Image: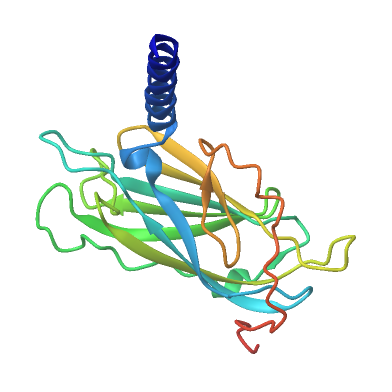
Amino acid sequence: MRKFLIIAFIFIFLLIFKTTVVAQDQPEGFYASTVDFVMPEALDAEAMYEFIFEVTNNAVAEREKADWIKQVDFMMPSQEYVVDENELTAPNPLYGDTDDVTEIDRWEVSFDSNTSTITWQCFGVVTSAEYGDIREGDTLSFSFVAITDVNEDGIATDGFNWILYSDEGNMVSGTSYIGEDSLDDDDNDDDNDDNNNDDDSGGGGCGC
């Protein structure tokens, strides 16, 4: 009986220790921010789509200002993707009418063909102090139009890398997949080799 209690105590101790370690490994606050696709729901090779995704800032409001997202870098899965630069648009600011130093004047968008990266960046009305527009708990949608590639397997490459920059000088990065939850770089998930949605409907194309 005594031996059983000792073993049980050790087991409980290890379980508590493991739970604590796992909890510490989970990103929190701004570092748990997400990028999730709204559309399309599936990808066909060499097809044109309007891509829409949402950026959510999971920072928590504190006595001092939290990390507010001011820039979004979004990379194509391969350089064979063709981004329609004429269709690149910037969202309207969430905080465009605050009438204080944190007011956001506009978002701007640019595309770097060398890295196949779209960058959205917001700018404030006070140039000496730039603030982010996606604040704690906020979600903002972004969109672009692109033609997918065709890889060696005859399908479109999935997996869009992204980086979110805060106005506090911090950043978080990850990868988002069509029809799947986003993964940030802190996730120890080995299941992200399933990069392609099994839906054969090919829905979500912009019909261009």
